[in-house]
Length: 158
Image (tube, rainbow, N blue to C red):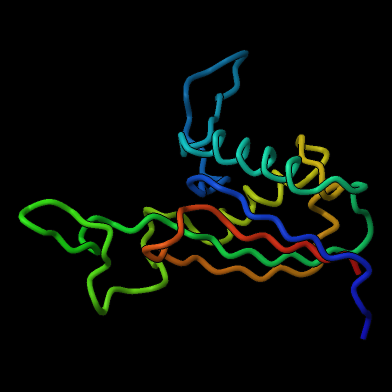
């Protein structure tokens, strides 16, 4: 069993967005122009890259990489209590902790957006390329009443 050479932990803040679903937006030079379906992808990737630059100041990692990501997604309004017709920040009892909603994005596509954001080839500063990732674990949770949307990212160089 190999031990970790380096462990990097980053908290990214913002609305996690999936990467990979594309929609056609016309033709150019006889080819269909495809654009990302999620309007939230660009701001999410920028937020991850910015948070990485603020929180990690080491060398860009090469070699086998393991990544763990916990996505924290905003809850629907129906999860919150109301008082006198006004929404509160208090979550109703028995509301789910994990998201299975398709509107939050597929887990693999959420991971793709983070991995590209970490990659120096795509403007990141943590790993040289996402092809170096040999192991990944991920989960998508709803925020609690004390945390905001974003992701906890753990990168381990083996």
